[in-house]
Length: 533
Ligand code: NOJ
Image (cartoon, rainbow, N blue to C red; front, side, top):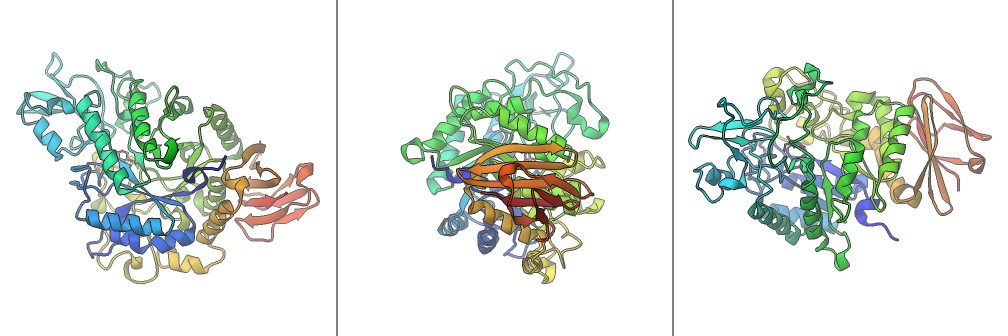
């Protein structure tokens, strides 16, 4: 069976505010993405996922959508989008949009109508409830950004529910008209030619019908953020969400020839593996790729990663295609968490595991979290619960392109500061440097593209002891070995008999890795790929 593009390919996430400004407002735009398509082609990725570009008051930087079928003027116009899509397709790049179905902006005309009166025909498009007996919120649910998830509406004397900001009211997905309207949104973009969606907070979309209190979280510590005070037992991951996900899949697949999955759905789902797997679907298929975020949080070591990979592989349902993520616009950057040497090892891991990798813009430069002065904070997450290191501005800073003013990102003051080391840590400079992490990423992606063992082959764990993780990737006679040293000491790794005589394809350190006799001498923090067959 030949793999579909979203199985063999590499996905690259673009945070559009921070990629490339072309209209001198310090904020990236669609034309800017278009201007950088050649870079993406040279990097070797297959698809881009663009975080939301819809009209929005930008209280949550676009995850508060005021119109699902247009483009915010800060990013451009629908015509600009069509042009970008055409340019991308011409270069063989797929384009995924961010679909935000759980909630709208409070400025969306649907919510403006809904809150206008209890009798309004869109009243039940959102989640309205009477106060509890004591006049307080209907239950104890907490917003993911802290504070009660219920907002009192003085005019109509009811509360509405918002899992995130009060400016992001949750839609009522039990209402057939909401379902129909949102499925039309998907068709609107599919008809324009988009290749798929990343679906925002998919597991949040349905809430328990009778809204019981959530139980306390016994593991809660205040530095986790207030949302973790309770377990989201009744406010997320309800069984009814699976029918919605399956309906979405049906729409996506209806755009493929002979029902083939040519358009892809990726679900944002932060759940333990057993619950995550349910989003592949059971009796009906659901999303193609429920995002697997485990590399972000698992302790960085051979043993824990080996266990994680084995558990994940074992839990996959039959026909379920794996995927891996190292970072995104909500989580600390991999270089900040693991350091520069291990960021290179992480690159090898991401691009040699079995399954679709998603790469976050800037990680290919080893960009770290950028320190943000309190006066420069823009993220509502940080503004609501300051000082807990929950803010996301540090991972959303502008892409440094070259040594020109503002790193070639903009001609004016960028909306967030650049990384302090941008004069050296930028695309132009690192492209010329054969030892840079960017060059490593390019080589890894090229290797993956040219090697079926890596893109779609089988995975066999060889060793996950001490500081060394090693595995085999295999397709027919093509056999590769990946060996990663997570520690600061050299190690000798004995190769299996069949791998004697392997030759080095790539190392994170330099090409002087010693492969002798039946063993590799791995240097500290070194990751390598070898070809055996
Ligand atoms: C998840 C998104 O990734 C995050 O950036 C956003 O704040 C929330 N969903 C709310 O839409």
